Image (cartoon, rainbow, N blue to C red; front, side, top):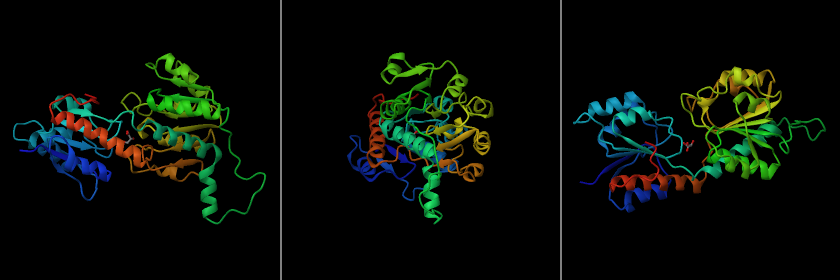
Length: 332
Ligand code: DGY
């Protein structure tokens, strides 16, 4: 019997084609034709009835889902031995529960680094230069022409950038900021090696407070974990430089959106640029009501090339697992 692979969302066409026709080990692929996110029941069903599940950031696979999948499976454990995540962040999967139920988890590191870093830089520019405000004004027919005092923003060139989380994406942002905009870079990450930092002219900060008090622009690139949930809260924002800019392309959970909205409304922060939100796709109404925040719909890795590369990487992991080999990008 061919192994069953459940796929929770539509994937780029070449990736679905590879899955249905060209994997070394032929599989019975169960695709999600209408592309609606699966609810807890659908996810438990996938884990209970497929040998592997290809999932995405929209699948909240918590302990209850694993427990329900185990309850439904004939031998009391999920049939699926692998969750191959299409994406690098795995905070939507309860890793402890996955481990306890014998389900391995893989991700797709590396392939989305540059595109995500590009969006972080785009958000910095949009927020600092008030480009979203300008576009909204023009499209609404409110532009009355050039004038010396119109929509004056902040220069990015030469501003100090503080990076929280100095992994692949944080370093790619540092390179762009340092070499492209002459930005001095500071970073916070206990495990980053100084050699990596020196290559992009970055200096280490000992604490988040130190990073916030010394940075004009702060860009978040740490994973969402219990330790980083609401890392940027009211107390942290109190350390930010007056007129600073916050950019988040990591995960919404890292920022307390109410505290951020308060700081933006009070003018303590000049602006923010966000690509991610806690509880996506809901966007906090307090942020939607503000002009000085740029809001993107989680587009960090959204290019044709990168989404295909993410799919290929997820399939490489799946293929290795089905062939009895260790998947290359095993998280647990
Ligand atoms: C990632 O890879 O984590 C992106 O945010 C999409 O999930």
